[in-house]
Length: 127
Image (tube, rainbow, N blue to C red):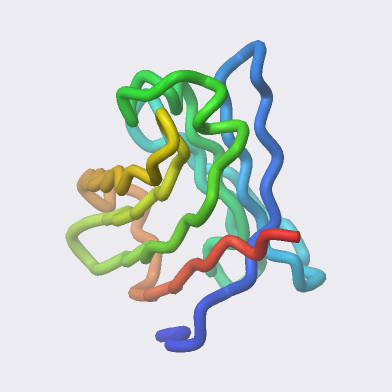
């Protein structure tokens, strides 16, 4: 399944634990969560389509202060699942010293969960 139109995402940031939770704004039926690696947890609906994810130690991964993550300007990306791998490619735009910094994140692991092929485009919907 390929979702070409970016999913509008909502965001919650836990400053104390430095964890970022992004979720589909559309109503979805949660089915299961899968921890991939040490820093990502993907949540899926009943069709095995990613509906949300949590990223742990975000400021460390991006190499910025927690303030920058809390005041995130933009986030876009793709979650791609193939027979062989799960690939998360994100681009964060965060404030830092009166600038906006682009911070890319690429994370790939084997698809040991036998998830079906899918591509989900993401776009953070800021208020």
